[in-house]
Image (cartoon, rainbow over all chains, first blue to last red):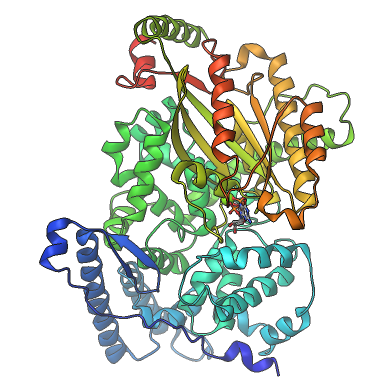
Length: 405
Length: 231
Ligand SMILES: Nc1nc2c(ncn2[C@@H]2O[C@H](COP(=O)(O)OP(=O)(O)OP(=O)(O)O)[C@@H](O)[C@H]2O)c(=O)[nH]1
Ligand SMILES: [Mg+2]
């Protein structure tokens, strides 16, 4: 039976090891670049300082775990799960009070990081994935997977092409088993929403979800809730319109929150979406170290898509002075790349993201999106018409209206 | 507009003095790679920039940026390379990357007819961009570049046994459209350096009347600084 497959625990070949890697005095002297596996099995290349930071991060993760256990002990194991207002007879007022108090505690706690072991449970709950799944029969995922088995579509062909190109070399993802799991999740989703189908970028997102969640099915539901509820609509649809909107909103925010950088980049004719598009589409999984990415996702699932703006702005902010000195586009990009790749301590980034940028409400962002939407749609529409005109009359090119941006 | 002209002229005059002094040209050129997913764009760039090749290369999202410097007898060319994502839906991002490029490399995979068809569409789009800009030549600085050096690259020649697009087919199309044509393999490194050398040579020839996307600059002072001081 196919049914058992998705329930099976994903057996990662690598065991997230909590071992410390102690640089010897010789490596310290020589400042040698070392290679090692991080918590999620990714190979990290770094110098001794990086190793030390990673060791500190592991220690912090452990301490944070103790905070969570203590809370579970005092408030009950599932205190953070969405309150079920099942019986109206219950004292609504006191329930509200305690759930508000809990949500304040929870928000602060989540910004400090969810212990890796609790992530599956907490993510499913706070993102709304549990609720989403509860609206369909238990067998939904297995039925979907068996129904689409053996079917070939443009999406499945592209997925097959990308399987070995998704974090190649990873000890579990890059095995036949890992490929098969990733394939089922992506193919399943491409049938669930055939308008989205498969968009490159989702392969990285789904792969990270598989590494975190206990079962393939849970990874699937996290992907579904991300695309359908957490992120802005149409991020991954065929014209990426949602993604274009987010980029414009981001530009606008950068101008407000980091005006000096924004002005400098504009002087250099550097469009931030040149780099930020990948951040938003892969949710930073291709740019930040894995535990830092996971910390961003912790907050993303609880607080929503505005978190992506916080984090993207913070990346520019932490390197503000350096960026202001640049005179070449190449320098901007290499500063940003170097920075993101070396953000081994998630708190270095998240403290800036949430404490140094002032507040950004989801409402304000929604408003800004609404404002940008018409221009984006008009631009995409114009481009489409121009492309169509190329296809139908190759012979006599007509003058097209002013080019977009 | 006045400001642009002014800085441009002062840049040119600065350039002439530099030329007189060194007798060599420094050219900074934006190069963009376009083509269907999996045709080998990233692999070609990695081969050129780092001499590396991976059997499984991560798919590109949005675009990746690389730089590489090539020294010719007549000039030193610094390439700013934008390697774009190939999936059809990323098409709507492409103008951001090819805007103002001095060279465009359109790649197809000789084992895929679809990728060849896609390459032709890219070329038509770029040409249309060129026509369009030619008509609004005054605003050339903001739009495209009629002197764009375009190359059609047939990649993965090491997979000869699986070939679906004949050499002549690519060659003919390139000829009809006035493009350079090169067959390459990122895997064996065949013709990869040649591809970039050929482009560099064309760019050097096009200078010192620099089309957009080529910025003449002084290594020590930096192009932008110059703009700031004199503009
Ligand atoms: N045999 C062979 N394989 C190649 C060659 N060039 C690239 N490949 C392989 O083809 C696959 C795709 O190559 P990429 O360089 O990632 O292709 P791309 O055009 O950048 O793809 P996207 O980023 O998805 O647009 C990789 O697995 C490469 O190893 C080549 O010359 N010969
Ligand atoms: Mg690529």
